[in-house]
Structure formats: C-alpha cells, structure tokens
Image 1 (cartoon, rainbow, N blue to C red):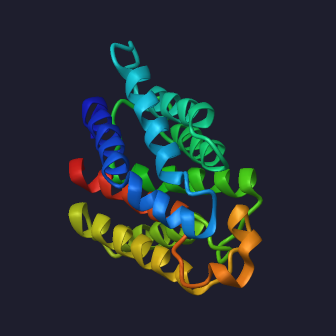
Image 2: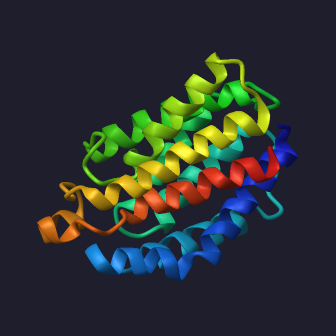
Image 3: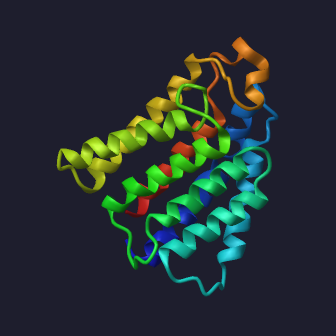
Length: 206
C-alpha cells in the first residue's frame, strides 16, 4: 500500500475505535478503570488532528507520528504501549515509499518487541500481547504457506480474535486488572480487544 492507503488505514483505525468506544470501556469497567475506550478514542482523535494538513509523506514518518501522539494523548498504560508499538513499527519501513504484506510481519515483530520491553509483559498475562502475538504467528505461517492478500490477513485477524477470547480464561497478572485477581476470569482484556479493532482496519484498505 502507498502512503495514501496507509493513511486510510489509520483513519479506519480511528473509526473502529470511535465506533467501539463504549464497548472497550465496558470491558475495562469489569477489570480496570473503565476508561480504555474513552482514552483510545481521545488519542486517535488527536492523531487525526495532528495529521490533518501535515506535510508527512512517508510510511515511517506517518507511523512514528501516530505513535508519538498516542503515547502522549492516550491515558493510562495504553498510551505508552500503543505509542511504542507504532514507533517501533515505523522502524521496519524506514526508507520505504510503500508498505507490502511482507512488511507487515516485521512491523508486528517490532511492535510486539516494543510492547514487551515497555510493559515488561509476556504472552499469557491477559494483555494485548495475547492478541498480537498469535496474530503475528498466524501471519508468519500464512505467508510461509504462500497465502496472500485477504487470505493471509484473515488468518492474522482470526488468530488475534481467538487470542482476545482466550484472555477471558486467564487471570490478569499485569496492570490494574491484576488487582482483581481471579475475578478477572471471564472478562476479555480490553487491550486485546482494541488490538483486534486496529488489525481489522488493515484488511479494510489492504
């Protein structure tokens, strides 16, 4: 995808978050502060303001700007985590004029690496990583099997959504959700849910 298409993906991410603002906050209300949807919506609205009329014209600069804005404008832990994810993803496409499906894998790799370093988290702790890591693994397998386009993206999104569902079955051991201990079982992690919404935006314009 070229720069304009990537911009459309970011716009779709903002739309997905806005449309699911209450859903995400409801998930967070069960095990956290109840503001994940509010914070994510505010952050992506700020992203749109930042990008409007800007002179940014490369994929790397676009992703880095998104990341920096989210890091400072999204409240709670999600801001630094998503901000770091986008900034790290930008490193994978530095110097490129377009972004291909093959580029998505190293972008996810860098994003996950950044989240793990920033959040000191691993898979299985009821966080966004439980959606993102399966998504990356599924995309890796799909590309290795020669799948392309929608088929590869469908595999990625399916794995992310299954990972998000999986978070209902485990105890939160990171972030504010860890305070409720076993009472977090039965509830989806809001970060895993918002990660699915962001990944879904990629397919919409890929």
